[in-house]
Structures are given as structure tokens and as C-alpha cells.
Length: 126
Image (cartoon, rainbow, N blue to C red; front, side):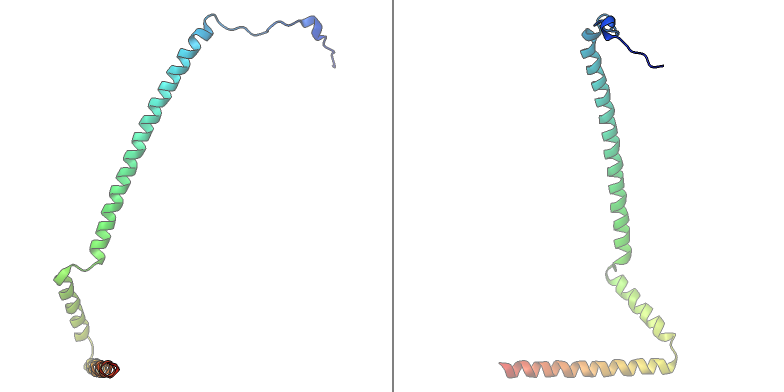
């Protein structure tokens, strides 16, 4: 199967041919293709920017709703908190209510004494 080719017999002929006027039309066809791809790229870029803007707006709205729900809104939120504490306190047994009141009063007493001691220490250091 092995054949020896004698390349000197073949010569230096070009086995390929090009159509007439190929190089004359080459520049124009390349420029047309570049313009077409440039238009597609611009269209895709505009679509991507629109999608990104829509996502940003949706994220801002979601953030606003979350912050609005999480953060208390003025006096109404404070009133609601007190009402919730009062409802929870009223649901306790009488013994539990008495115990909480006693602990709360002791804490206030200790806090007042600590404040008085701090004031005395500040006066002495002057």
C-alpha cells in the first residue's frame, strides 16, 4: 500500500481557485458582518442592563419591605409592645405575677443604690 510520490512531477500548481472579484468584495463583506455583530451586541447589552435595573429595583423594594416590617414604627410600635407585655403578664398565674413584681422592685432598688454609690464616688474623686 505504500506509494512513493514524486513531487517533482506534480509541479508548483495551486490546486485551489478563488472566484473572480473575491478580494474586491472581501473588505465589504467583513465590514457588513462586523456591523451586524455590533448591532447584536448592543441589543444584548441593552437587554442585560434592563434586566439588571429590574433586579436592582426589586431588591430595593424587598429591602424596604423587610426594614419596614422589622423596625418599630414610632409610638404605635411602643404601644403594641406594652400591650403585648401586658397580655403576657395577665396570662401568668398570680404567684408568677407576684414573683416578677418582687424581682423587678428589687432590681430597681439595687439599681438606685448603685447609682447613688457611683455619684458618691464621683464626688469624692473631685
